[in-house]
Length: 352
Ligand code: NAD
Ligand code: DAU
Image 1 (tube, rainbow, N blue to C red):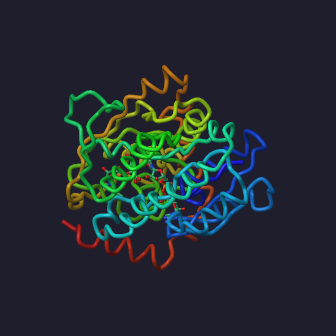
Image 2 (image 1 turned 60 degrees about the vertical axis):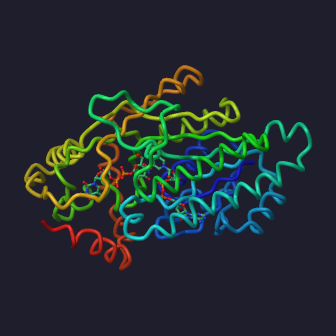
Image 3 (image 1 turned 180 degrees about the vertical axis):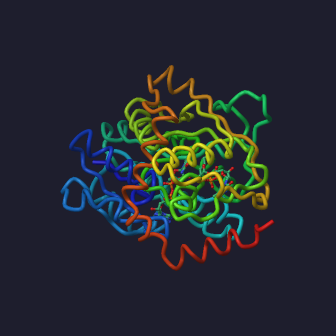
């Protein structure tokens, strides 16, 4: 059995679904169900006895210790986090609480559990921490992509909190010999992504004929990976990664934000030929401290663990657009009053 945290969020729910498609090993899924957690994402495994959902906080040491004792997992995959950069700019505290303190408490509970395992189980145990390329900071236009030894230079409260959690994970391996693995992945997209992030926001706004708000000049670069490819990479690192190591995960898909938005518009116009989606593109005030470019060098995971992505951006973005068209009820259900308040808060002040 494995224990996953944050398994009702975007990547977490894709990970749970993907995991259960590939074997019978059970999952305990601990998620606080913040605004970003959604049990609808897991409705297809609602009655599956291999999946045990527990609503809880990774910072709740008593709960986590109890779950570890009860279920005796061979691994923990830590996906739980506050994940949206713009929200971290408006209010960093939840990011400090969950990403730093929560990870610390989770590490403590996990280490105590690991210490009392017998030699065999202890040797096999893994704590896999899912992190981000944003910890490395921003790249100059021609600079080589981030490798695992790139300096940490986080620029937002979100990335600083993730960097801090990565350092704690590293220290637990170095100091206590705790068998950690860390992954640093580039931007994900795909089904179940909350429509506050670039790609689902643009698809949902376009379908609703709302403006498509591009921050600044729209020439910032991100490196896009289809979410299922991230999930297969996590499984591969869990299976074959070396304790104490970090692995960068990326899809070799650098694109400017403007290219992404234009591509979404053009693919939607293919599906709805009478509608001109590009006309909805609106330039708005930039994100404070906006990182200009991220790019992942995924050579290590390819060379050492033989992982490579299955999707190209062209295939992944089509699947994603079709998923949002086919699941408009899911979108309607997450666009609650709280969602509308966030959109108001984030975009109202940006009007140029
Ligand atoms: P998300 O915001 O969609 O989901 C986060 C999940 O964590 C939610 O279900 C939420 O309820 C849960 N959660 C939040 N605080 C919690 C707490 N204290 N205890 C338990 N559960 C809690 O995020 P995501 O995009 O799925 O990202 C998952 C992980 O992957 C994060 O650690 C993020 O930093 C990392 N990551 C994301 C991306 C990306 O592009 N989305 C890329 C690289 C790495
Ligand atoms: O790089 C990995 C990271 O990718 C993850 O660690 C984060 O959890 C995830 O949220 C994502 O961070 P970004 O800030 O890159 O993603 P976001 O979707 O918020 O924005 C992508 C780019 O699009 C960024 O340059 C800002 C821009 N943007 C975003 C929104 C929401 C816009 O131009 N307009 C928008 O409305």
